[in-house]
Image 1 (spheres, chains in turn green, yellow):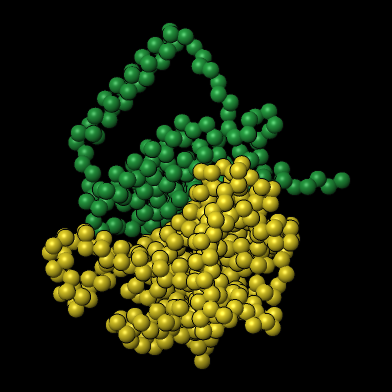
Image 2 (cartoon, each protein chain N blue to C red; image 1 turned 120 degrees about the vertical axis):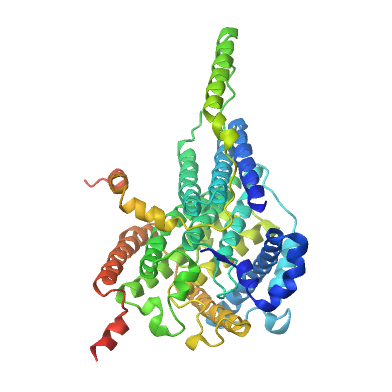
Length: 173
Length: 374
């Protein structure tokens, strides 16, 4: 019951923050709502028993990505933009394009619903009472079955690091 | 297995009998929730007290170092000074700058507080009193405490002042940078103990200094020093208190904050220092282990463990304050040089060294090897 309550709370946090992120006009506020949505996703991982994944989500997205986004927003500001965020843009399009959009969206919804129908109807949220540690399993899998992906991603990160160092290096004359 | 405060308390036979009616009435889940609520309430209040006493200790020790008397009016030896400060903070007028971004202005101090108090959930106070001994405890602590950096950045940005902005930017970049040496030097210990949970790491050491991880081998000793320096920088303590450098930035990211919002920032800083000292004592200095396992796992043992834990942590806390009032502040470029050119490579080297030591000597400590010679 308690875990179910946490699950619902995390889902609500995710959905509400994601919606407010889309609705807000202030780009800094959008970043903060994104943080709420990512936190909610971490909560979802946690209630489904993926403790390591949840901690990684918080570590990478909240400690790293959101902060970097805030930095990027601060670096890109200019005098032409209004102070915070975007100028309102009038709606583009006519009746035909709107009708097309509504049709496309409903088709997409129907297709997704057909795909997920089985999951909605035959899946019950199985709440785990005693958590099994996922750390060992993930570690073992990363260094055996998925060693190639692991190594490739580490090489990619190393490349990014070296590239950043080269770009940031002061020019010697 | 994830062991928790609730599972420990329900394993004590005396309490189990007395909790029987509660379990009967509310069901096991709600009982666990009630126990957690009380435990979390105690931890949060003790941490707030630690933060308050931290300000008192800071003022008293700095006074000692500078041959002053320090606060001595409120209560015996001025020990109630922090309560007087707290009352003053609550009574103060709540000023919000006119052009401040109000939403973020309110959110910044809260994020700092939430980040650091959420980290308190995994602090290993004694073998029974740990709110949740998560399997990913160390990782969780590092992850959730990164909210503090975000709070500092937002506090600096939202007050719409140049000093605050500069302080916030400095704070965020400093915290992001110094997370790397902290994490890598902690990884060295994780490699040795073979687990990410605080309980496992602490229990694989013992009460005597010979079996603490800090004296396990030369690499862990260096890792401890790297961790300590980098954690000072992560908590924005002098000599790394650039985000709030008084001589340049008025007082950095919390220049525009008054009253309880300022108090939140200050409290978060002091509690963060305490949490980082806790991590240092748990990972490197044997944590709550009592020498010769006096008291065992009984209630007396728990009390002794708590005392040992708090004395180790408070000693480190004293060292932190001592360093603050001894060393001058670094420049920004020196700060970044120290992080990226010295601490991070040393920490990486240590991680490799510890791994090699673990493979070659089969996890034996240096002292055990020397003992084996004779």
